[in-house]
Length: 377
Ligand code: PLP
Image 1 (cartoon, rainbow, N blue to C red):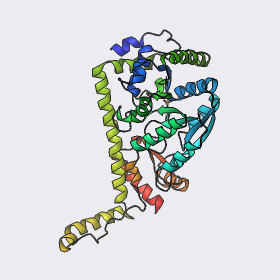
Image 2 (tube, rainbow, N blue to C red; image 1 turned 90 degrees about the vertical axis):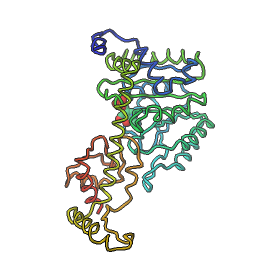
Image 3 (tube, rainbow, N blue to C red; image 1 turned 180 degrees about the vertical axis):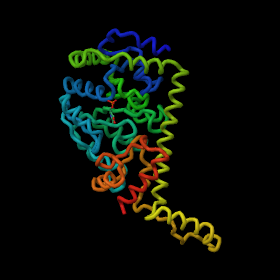
Image 4 (cartoon, rainbow, N blue to C red; image 1 turned 60 degrees about the vertical axis):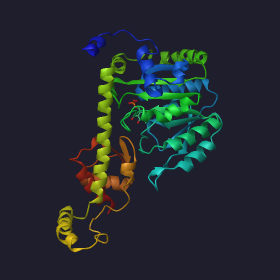
């Protein structure tokens, strides 16, 4: 009711957006007790979802920052290079994903970041890296932080999935909060598309953590000069929904419960797909009968079943499906296998083998497992 009433207001917002929304967004990502917020060192502006926040941040840096090179992970969300290049920055990549382990190429990442020129900007996915689903551990984040600060590299965090990765808003913000805690500067682009399901409302925020309250005031003023000729001011409706939920403790609690349920469902889809691949055989019905035979006839007759390899698993190591984090799984399937699955099984995914776990259900997992099995055998 409250949200409906508020949505009737159709006045312009200020260039920087809804003040409450900005304050609450900074608190959500940096934590209510963040020293940067308490010291008024954060300039936050409401932007057009995550993409708009990245673009405004990119243009601000291109105008005012001394180093114009931004290092982005390889691979990354397909829009990153275009957003930053069109904003006036030069995009370079740093190694991130190791296809051999289907995990983080941590050594490669450290080497590439070490050789970036001092002061360069480094784009970091706050959690649930898109498209790989591979995140650094907290220990690795700490090493990344130390290296970046020692080289005066400027972190630009992209947070499109807060709460969606682990189910906890605070846990998913840990990487960012480590960088804020050291007192250094950083940029943060937030999106509410996924975690509030507000895709089409285009609700997001750009926060710049500055060295002092004075600088934050100047930064905000310069951000206005970026935004004004770009789209004048942001839309009201989505931001008022977010602000309403964030400031009402009952609504906030309900939202966090729903987020947790969504994250848990995704984690359960990962487990179901992994288990389904473990039992896939050339003929599922034959395997089923074979398993029955083993369980009811052979096992009672044998002292040990350790030597009995009766599971016809899908070849390969699929543990990355349960290790990866967030909405996406980088399956490791190549473009020929992806094409085969499209042709033979009508399963559609990006040609780099990325699937959205959110699009799976217990009903569709067996079909996907059959298709992957057929594609790799
Ligand atoms: N950043 C990443 C890593 C994303 O995956 C996305 C969306 O897929 C975005 C930013 C931007 O999303 P939006 O502009 O819809 O908030």
